Every structure is written in C-alpha cells, then in structure tokens.
Figure 1 (cartoon, rainbow, N blue to C red):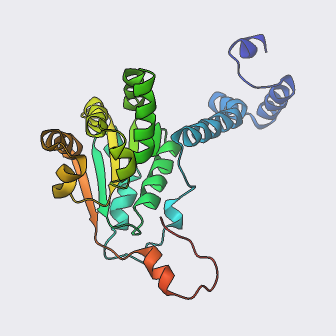
Figure 2: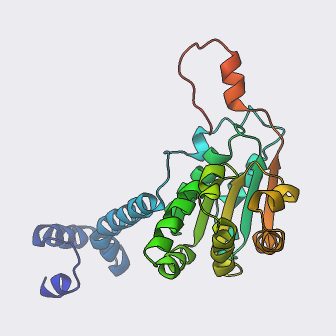
Figure 3: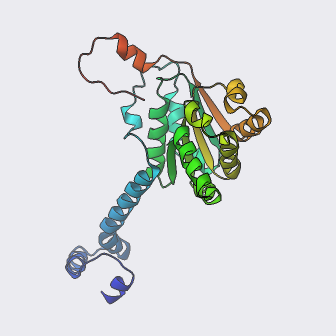
Length: 253
C-alpha cells in the first residue's frame, strides 16, 4: 500500500484486499487482476478529465449531435460527413473547418456538439463567439497582455470561433480587429485546427474585415487545408416562428 500511496493511486486497503481475495478464488491471470484493481479508478479519472475539458471549452450550451434535428435540413447537411468530423481526424491532421450559412440553420449547434465530442475523445477545445474574442483582445491590449493571450489561444487543439460576422459593434469599437483575427489564425495555421461559423460568404470577407490585404492573408490561412461546408438550408427559427406552439421543441442552434 505504501507504493500505491506514493504513486497517488486512489485504492484503499479494503478494495485491495477484496481484489486479492477475488483473484485467488477465481484464479485470475495477472492482467485481469490489474484491471480489477485499476479499472474503476481509471474510468473515474478519464470521466473527470472529460468533464474538465468540457468545462474549459466554455461552450454556451449543452449541445449534442444526438439531439440535432437531422431531418429538417437533410438535403443541406450531410450527417455522415459531420460524424466523420466528430472522430477528430481533421484535428489530428491540423486541418480547419468553416461552416457558412444563414442564421438559424444549425451551425452553432453543430459546432458546439462537435467540440463536445472532441473533448470526450481527448482534445483540448475552446469555444467563443468572435465578439467575445474581440472583447478579450481589447482588454489584453489595455493591459499589454496581448502576446500572452494569443499564445494561450494558439495552444488549444481546436478553437471554435462562432458568429463570425455578427460582431459589428465590437469591431467598430476595436480598429485593430482585423489584425487581431489575423494574429490568432496565423499563430495556429498549419499547427492547430480552427473551426469557424459564419453567415458571410468568402467573397465578402474583405468588406467585413475592412483591410483588403490583411483579409486576403486571413482568408488564405483559414482555407489552408480546410473543409468549407456551405449550408444552404432553411432557418429552424423562422420555421418555428411560423408554426403555432404545441409544446417545447429542441432548437438545433
């Protein structure tokens, strides 16, 4: 027990004695005995690690792929393709993902659900809207901690930037916005994955960012080794607004 305590293995003397007794009675091989001792503590440790990663990701909502209304925009959203992204292979390869579509088609739900699934398989994820990013960067400019802030964001396996294009007020208050977005994407390009949810088509990014050369450089790094999913579907919110309410339904956003 002293050795187990030194290794910080959370096994009591009672559990160890019970496992030894069971192993003797059943004639368990060594590996089965070790699994009997360490299996449950390891499972608890993995579960806590997943919970920490999900908490650290700062998702706005508890979204899952299982809860998504796949039938509503079945022609616009390929479930098989989304499930493939959920394996995390694109993150392992350091590739990017861009979801383009009007408000209400389910981008936020899908991005947060993908992020949660990737937390469960071991990746470090961080979610934020572009407006939240700009607020954080403005604060870091004020206290001169921007380099540290960019380094922090560059270390996540996957950064999800949602609502890119909804932050006009914050962007107007932060003239450095385009340059800050570029710094983050450049720090991650070719090393870590970034997922972007936006209602702005690529050809309009120059107008949105307001700096043509920088916008082109930003776009170049975002689309580098990226999959672009353009969701030309119906708005779930608009659909619900037109129908009389007959009980609470799951909103996929």
